[in-house]
Length: 190
Image (tube, rainbow, N blue to C red; front, side, top):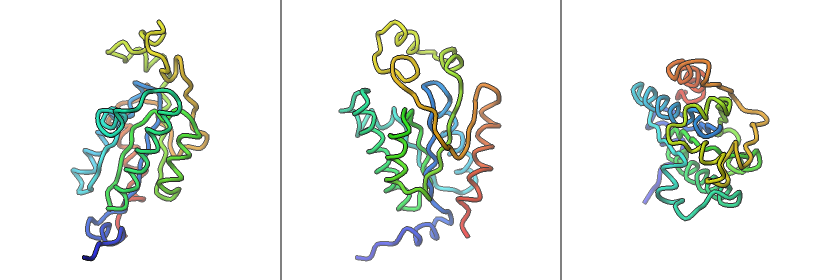
């Protein structure tokens, strides 16, 4: 049995596979942007997959909590899955808080620096909290949710993201188009 290489799969799909890693506080707009970007790319003939914390924590990562060790393992597993996806020619959009530079660097090492595009969703905590329809920030501030990024647990801003977007100052439509404009030269098949 012969398996096709990544480059053969990319040729078949007529795209270059990369991982677009969106990081930011809860409620910053990461997942909304990931879904909008994936929808627009798909409409234009690109083959995409979305991975986010809720999807993985309801399945493969349901055994993990939210302490820093479990968060690191959550991201390690997400990075390993992403590496498999791009090995199959699939553009992968990852939406994870991934709260520290160390954790994000682990993901980048697993995936590979040339295949990892880090986008920091820099929406201020006040805006994220105002958007929180589930009251998670309120519960975290009351101490009812331990290890909540931006409140009772650390969130480190990325040191050198490839792109920064503050969703509090523009629309999802504009922000998703900015991401697409940035990644199109990277995913176009040559």
